[in-house]
Image (cartoon, rainbow, N blue to C red; front, side):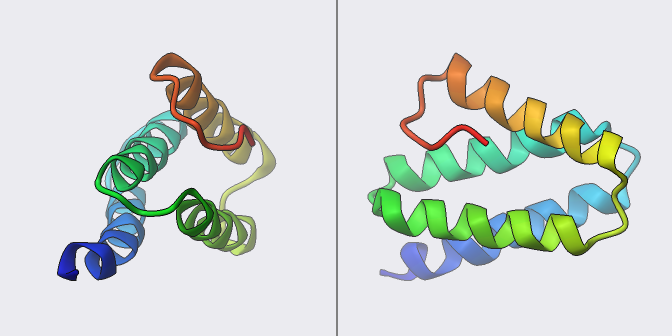
Length: 91
């Protein structure tokens, strides 16, 4: 039960920690997708994972990222989802 509570918090912490290092925005998208896919694999419902991704998406839109950076994050996310055939919605 604890892992189901910690997964969304870990997803957010992962995103925030990646922002603080010098990483390409595409890698931020990879990280978001990797964590979301692993949440599915550990038994989280698809609806719950999609909700968490939507929450992160909203935070990214309110952040200091510019349009080009947001596009790169989205491309990284979509690449990971397609490559690993994760059943999440393409953004």
